[in-house]
Length: 328
Ligand code: UFG
Image (cartoon, rainbow, N blue to C red; front, top):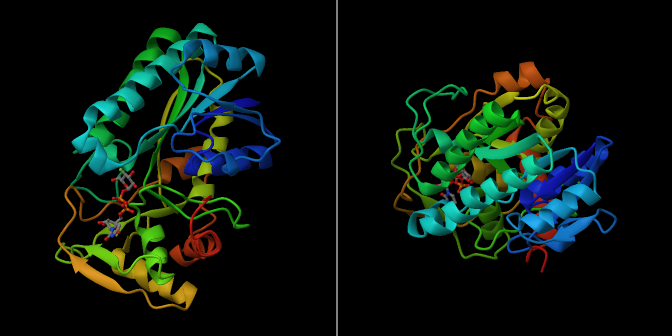
């Protein structure tokens, strides 16, 4: 299949491009390069720089490359920024997604895979989280993702769009060969920040709160390798044949780790001590998020290949220790 990967030069998108090639399909990348990195995409992959909401441009790409299915990774992801600048988030994450979908439907491209997030659930009472748990986002980032999910449901019913939504828990890890990886600016995610502190690139790792109702007082999260996320997307390709198909999957390993456990795992993998500093809680952090991914396992035959956090951190250590400034 010819797959248009919107946001294919970003962290998850670029890893997905590689898995698409490995699975024998043909990726085409569209990325604005506002946050993406040109070097994250091999030079032999067709690459178009531009905006997903530029309808004449996207129309031309869909036609020229005979696109069968679109995957959309081009969202803004910084939760804190979404609180301080919601217009930026609604414009990029919702309005531009609407424009992309409109262009697709006009061009009769009706298969779509959407990157969603555990943030659509907010702070659920039940753990682990199944897909039918109530959606109650607690920040604009999560709300924009849920708005897109609702839009997809309407388009499936009105126009026969077939789609799959993947709600990622904590995406992490990097390519096994160490050649592409996570490079966010600013970096807010735990594992890259712990590694930066281990490498001496940051004075300390700030631990945001140790008074949570968890065994060691720090937050629990479900860390899932980016290549495992990508493989779930590819497994959904042949489930989107019937018009109006609507699929929703949580993606996580189902084993939560605390912030302190992540620090210990980085110390074990790297052989280095991580200097830490305890600070107050970060606003909006739920104590625990853990996926029940039974549906992906049963319906897609998905099985995470990285099933321990050490195996994930080994890949992250390889990337960050050899690319201390990311792609720069
Ligand atoms: N943390 C620290 N210090 C840091 C960074 C993170 O203590 O420097 C802690 C956080 O407080 C949290 C845990 O490490 O308890 C994980 O934090 P991340 O920022 O790595 O990830 P989040 O769980 O906050 O966010 C992830 C995705 C979001 C998504 C969210 C779903 O990155 O896109 O899960 O709730 F919205």
